[in-house]
Image (cartoon, rainbow over all chains, first blue to last red; front, top):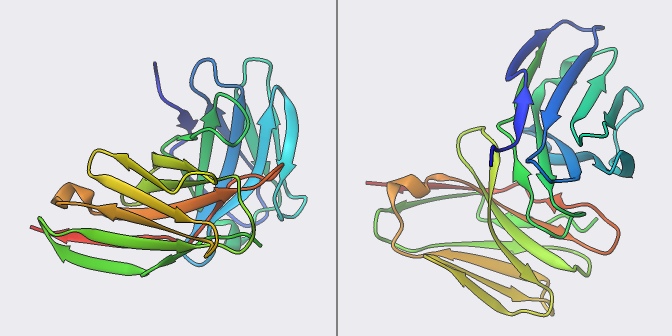
Length: 113
Length: 110
């Protein structure tokens, strides 16, 4: 089976712009979670989707949003980018919700200038 | 917060030695998992231990869980240069997502 794929792998944006990141889970996986990783804060949970429904949301401002499509692919959007949004954004998929192991994609490295 | 905290933050050992990393958390959990991350890439799942389990093995990995102390340890035996990575523990409780610790950076010197 193909692993979790994330596009794009690298992205450079300027403050105030918006960005959309994409994640394709492993075939058959219905749960997709998103994380933000920075050197200072570590890995922080953004949100989790299961069968197109947001099941959990982390403590991030409303500028961060996401969605999941019927084929389980997921997108996350960040509007009005800030310098502090520079991070590695990781997507993970799993068969069911949370308690199973999560399979991570390689991440999207976002740099905000 | 139930965030796990790994200890030490960084560890440097010689190839062939054993590496031990610890994780402490604050609230009751359902499961605890360990993940490895190589140099800013995606995480790889290593092992999951449930709250009613005390020890689990997988190849050169041994994980223990002490729910009374709210702590877990990951032992890598006979380490190799390829084990150089960051190691994270992650915990989950009922109806909550995985919460990751800040990680231990392991360097294995050949």
